Length: 238
Image (cartoon, rainbow, N blue to C red):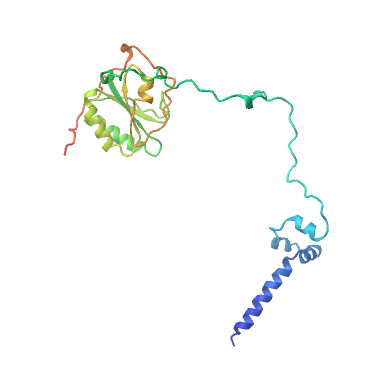
């Protein structure tokens, strides 16, 4: 015969009362005193301070760990650094502290570089893009840089190209980047600004460590492009 709802409710209430009695401080102390170590698992989250309060013992709890012994010595920075005011740093753009009187001539650009970045997960994409580019454009192809090199902080390869390829090669890279990060920068007499301030990015930008590069070189030092590949595949057109 099935038990009535009233009988079930009575049993549930009795079970709740049994647990309440079991977990009460007095009952817990009795169980621990009787050697029933299993009771500790039932009350694991209850602090020792509650047990001491229930038995009238109010001694302070011991620290979790002893404080580390003090070391002798002095800070190499001294003890007045908190008095230092905030100071304006030296400009990261030498020669650009004031606005120029005239814009630069676009003819200052002698050529361009495209730096294609990759990592251990995207090197196959980089290899495919490299193959496609040298099949279609007369560029100056550099070698593989499997570690950071120069101002570039990740593996990369590069190719240089002349100004006349700009209207064709840049849109081609935008459509065929395969999701890779690509830095496009001009070559002028300011290599530092070329990498930091005159650059274009395909997809996302990333840090370029070019702050140590020269900011003013002679015209004879501006990089000249000498194509070293011959295209073999006609450029696709709609």
